[in-house]
Image (cartoon, rainbow over all chains, first blue to last red; front, side, top):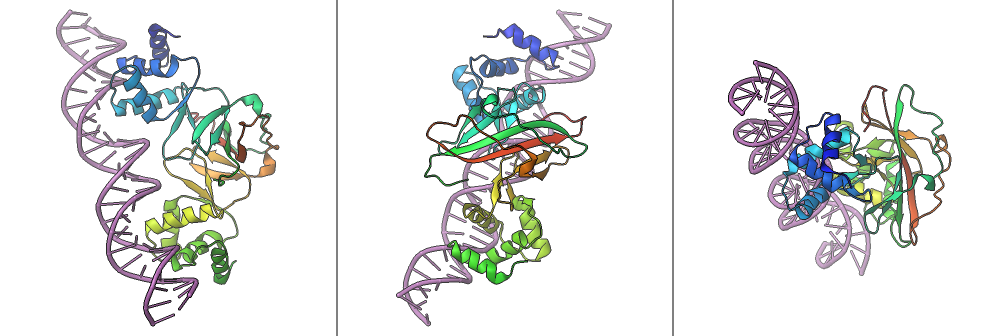
Length: 142
Length: 142
DNA sequence: AAACTATATTATAATTATTCTAAACTATTG
DNA sequence: CAATAGTTTAGAATAATTATAATATAGTTT
């Protein structure tokens, strides 16, 4: 478990002011055993429930985007009406269970190394993400 | 180039009534040399420009979803504020150019076969999609 | 520590993509 | 050709996200 002062240092190091709100959000996001996936709404709800505190939705949006820009969060490429974020910033992939709409981490060594033979000229590969959609046998394909 | 009567047959075969609007949309989507990617907005604009005809937005949404359900279109998993569709329904991957926000097909044999060692128990793999985000060197990672 | 400046937070309005609704319309069937 | 089941439509409703502009706070300078 990280201490408040550690979050303060981390924020300051990346040029973000360690405000009350940002520290609360750090607590909810990073003071955990396991990484996890969330939507902005999930996060706002967590803050309310866990810390019994209200942070303006706008601030939650701002903070999540700031954290993403600094590399503390990743956004996950799923087609959905809302954006999903991940506190696991390591290189890894995802299963998406179409029955339950759940996103599940797929360990990187569960898939052989992906080698892109021909990249777009003049561009650099920023990320390679695999999304494996799964469902029970009787479901429609998406 | 496909003829109108061929679209009529195709629609009827899959239990969709071949209406004026659906045939127009077929023309725009499938009467081409190459497959392509689009958003609902792109499509509505194309209809207006190419056919000089106005189809209600609701109908465009309905039709695209109907076509997707029947397997004539694929939806692409990109995290974005809007949904992207693909007339290329074969198994393939994508590059996403973060500089231009463009989606580019990645030939299937540009990537070695992807082998998932351990799948979620009780579930069947419905699709495996790779999204390769690229950008010029000086861009931020997404 | 007061004053200053740059950055953050907030409630609320605005915007955008998408879905819903219910009335009018049309293709198919008997 | 009448019945009916499926479609289309404009516009309203909804939901996620972004913009706005006033207020508050953090860091810095005096």
